[in-house]
Length: 338
Length: 221
Image 1 (tube, rainbow over the protein chains, first blue to last red):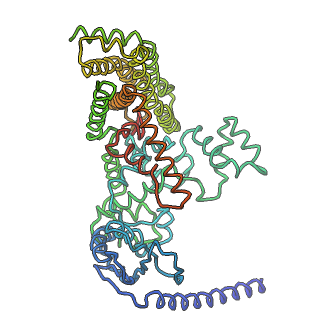
Image 2 (cartoon, rainbow over the protein chains, first blue to last red):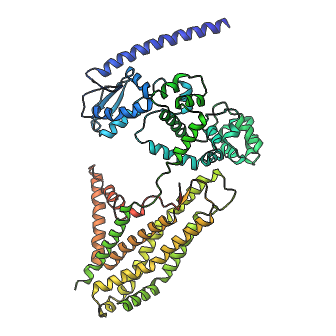
Image 3 (cartoon, each protein chain N blue to C red):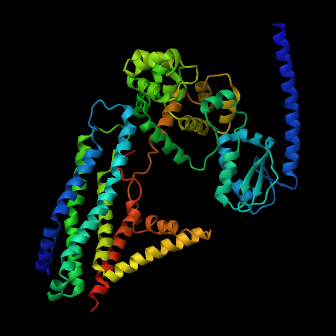
């Protein structure tokens, strides 16, 4: 025991030393990367860039209101983390010095693409592991919120899950289940309601995992439509590995709704209590109870049905025009010119 | 003039009735087959994606059918004239362009049958199916798109068929020249991509074949 503790202490010491060295290396690298660069400040954005034709300032002016509208008052903390970009010639084959901090960007991007670079680089301030884990992806501002809602609409309609379908039809308790913002006990039965879904999950997502060792016979029984075997196999999975029936985009959209409803301090309230359940944090951020927030989220998603697959008006005219054109070609064919 | 159109329509019907009947049957059947099984009451959430996949897979047949119908109808419209070296057409008391216009119009009238079949088949398929919540059917949009595709295909092949062997030779020569230039450019490592340019011109935006591209979905979100 004493030996193990000594080894653990030694490891901790080595880790701390390595951390210090890494910090020094980062600091030196940052100095090297930013040498000869300019700093552009727009709102809370601090961008360190090398001289290039890229429209950084205009892009930052475009991106900042979008960033500010998502993080609200928490966006004031962003200047603590300046973003380093290095514009490079995309067509040049000349070997460049390798930098280990910042992002390389081709210098021929237009204004919209440069804004998108800024929006996709910004990191959410004060995000904690619990929230990051629940989100499953970075919470970043978007220039196209309507597209994001349309994606979630498609997910709600096409997800192979009865719980998701019931959520789409208005069962708010099911919505809370599939978004994982309510009671987290018995998730298997809440997420995968029907035996067919459980069987499909085992046989499609976990075949290799269960095909060897002691679980192989249960897998065989599950394949023979024995729901007890499928359920037992899924319950034996390590915690946190059961796949969510609804993709991450739905959760991210819920957070956006909470932040939109809660005003400028919503993000600060969201990250204020990392130990609280996600549902409570979202409710606190939105300034309303979680049921009302989920109803609002669902209504927004349902209102964002993607455009139907119809031909655009100009395509109809183009088709008529081409038909007339080729008809005219036939009328004017050299065969008829005597 | 009406009597003349009816006579040409009748002769064209005689030459192409097999194509029209088979095309109409296929156009009626494809939407029904694409939604097969959708009427099952026990269709669960697991099957929604399967349904969309099936509809999308079967949807590839609509542009193919439209192309085939356009090609065969255009060939049938001119086959007898080509065989008779256009002597019959030349003996008619009719300007050449009028004669061509009547043939062109008769083809459109005959193509109305498969277009109507797509509309009726789609509507019937949708009425008899139980669609999962959130999905919507687009029978009219599909039929309209099919109609445009059939018309464009028919017009293109009609123009080609109406031309002389010299015209066909010129068209084939241009295509062969483009292929040759592309091959030579590839060998010389030049940054020339004629196929991509042709694809952009023909298939994207208001290009003549743009109506054939994209997803042909009878049912979608």
